Amino acid sequence: MSNVAKMTLLTAQEAAAYLRISMFTLNRIQVQGSIQPFRTPGGHRRYSIEMLNDYLEKTRRGQRN
Image 1 (tube, rainbow, N blue to C red):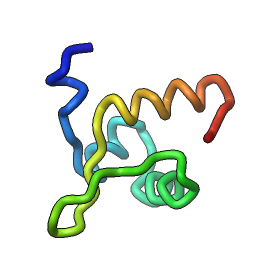
Image 2 (image 1 turned 90 degrees about the vertical axis):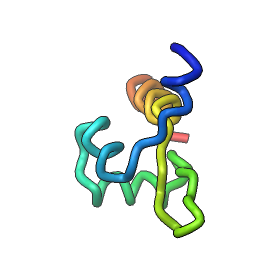
Image 3 (image 1 turned 120 degrees about the vertical axis):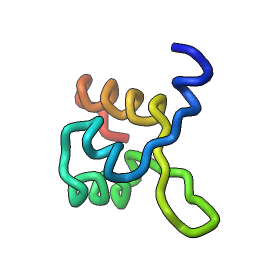
């Protein structure tokens, strides 16, 4: 994966769409500590593609944390 793809940041809505889950589920995953988003100075959550792909790999193997 290229460095550009790794550093591409998605909004919470885009991340939920990427994972094919609801915003509620994305928030629950974050609260559980499985994903730690970056925060903008305004407090908005941003997710990297690499972070989301890592989460998908872990859950595919049955490992949540």
